[in-house]
Length: 371
Image (cartoon, rainbow, N blue to C red):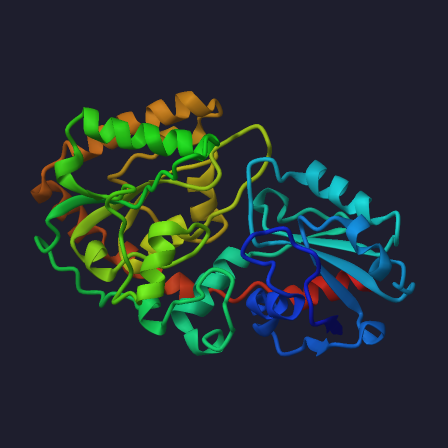
C-alpha cells in the first residue's frame, strides 16, 4: 500500500514549514510498520494523507486529481479534544466528499474503538507512541523535527530503575499539572481548580507542583528543550526520573474532562507515571479508571479508592476527586510506604504492559477498510 509522502495544508503553527518536512515530522505511525511504501508520485499513491484541520477547498487542485482507486486518509491522531466525537468525524469526512467518496478518517477516540463504520478507524496512537519512545527509541530517533519531541534524546525517555525503596520517597505526590495562561477550556479550569485546592488545603508542602514559574524539566534537558518547555506548548518531554523516584502518586488533570461529548482517550499524562513507577490519581472523563484496567490491563491498588470515576456530572466528579485526594494525602508518609510495599508488584506489572502489549496496527486496519 503506497502512501503519498506529504501531509497537506495544515494550519497548525508547528506544522506549516513545508509539506515534505511536515510529513516526516508526523510520520512515526507509518514508520512503526514496514509494510507501508512511500511515494512522492501523487498518481502512484493509494492513500493521500491530510491533517484533520485541513480545508478541502484549499486543496481543490490536488483533490480534483484523485482517481477512483485512491483514498483520502484524514489523520485525526495528533490531537484530541472533548468535541471530537463520531458526529464531528462524520462531518469532517463529508467536507471532503464533494471531491471523492473515498475518504477514511483515523482517530484516537477510545469511545469508538469498536465502531464498525466504514469510514472511521480507531488507532491507539498514544499507546504506540509511548511504547516506541520508551522501549525502542532508536526507531524514531532519526525523525527530523518529530512532532512532539523535536529536541528530545533517548535519555528523555529513560525508565527509572525499578528499585524505589521504602522510605526513599519524601513527597506524597507529584503534580505535573501546568496551567497555560490565556487558555480557558475545560481542562485548564479544572487544572487551576486543582492547584487552588492544593494551596487552600495547605497540601503543597507534601508534593512537587508545577506552575508557570516552576516548570519541570526532563533528564538533562538541552537548551532548546528548556525553551520549548518554558515558552512553547504541545511538546512531550517527560518529567525527570528523580521526581518519580521521590514521590508516591501522580496527581493531575488529563486532556479530556467532559462527559457529554462521548470522547475518551488516555494520554501521556497518565502513561508517563505508569511507566515511570508511580501510582496515578487522574481527573478525566468518567470511566478512565475502568479503561485503564479493562482496556489496557493496568492494575491499581485496592487501598486507593477511585469512587469518583463513575460520576457523570463533571463538577460533582471533580468535587469527589479532590475530596478523595485530600483523604489520600491525609495518610502519613509511613502509611503510604506501607501501601507502596504491599503493591510494588502492581507498579512492576504496569511497567511491563508497555513492553508486552503489542502495537496497535494501523496498516491492517486501513487495509481492511479498503478491502
